[in-house]
Length: 378
Image (cartoon, rainbow, N blue to C red; front, side, top):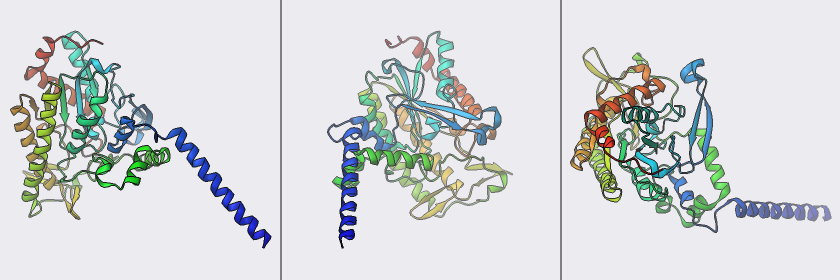
């Protein structure tokens, strides 16, 4: 009996010690007594002060066995040390972020270098792409992320968007583009916003899952093979779904463009994106069989292609109507070898894309406009 009591007391003591230890850790590393706006941005997958080295040998072979990936204290990639000097801010999802493109070789780095060479001065172009982001998250970023970056007032927002919206995205995804407070109970929301242990668990989950932002624009290690394009017909109701999805996308893009032009006095540069979900073969379109899931159903590459073409048309109309620009990169036939999977480009693709973006900037007068503008004070 005494031994049982001693065991119970020992267990109670261990539990109390554990609770006290957890409470001490939370008080030391959590944010229970502060309202840190940066902490709340973790809900949309924003990461700051990141310096990682990824093994990329499976993607690029021994020529590039590792990739160095950096995000600064403001959550941005690039070489802009002072946010006040940023003239162009690129916004988008994983294809903008470019997780497996080394620092200094992203399409933004390529474009920045070409602009600098042409203008004879440094043009600071920052990368605000985040894995998994869609137009839902871009609105969150404009409302809650960019306003707390000190001195940020770019002249142009380069919107490399649409890939994550085309898969019939009628509602936002939790942990990528949705404010948790809207859908969570108060205690759960408080833990997600302030708990150090919760934050550690979320970081470990991201590392294990590899930051997969959605069901189709994943980071794969293989390009599609020719015999994988087996889809030859679209879903019977895809046109109705595309119409609904495009209308919802257009409303969100209207909000984004309006915020860019009114709050920042900047111009949007909207860019459509290439992909390998559908190709032309023997005079007909064929697609990959399972690209995205909506309402429990799987849709193929031809369905996706119909959706993204509709989104691109809406993007062209909205951005040019607002006095901005539209670059049709989605219609450019990039070599298959420029990609490491169906949507993400490797270093050669980033070089080609950055070069084409510069050519479009020249053609549409943006380079001349930058030439006539004074660079921001550093």
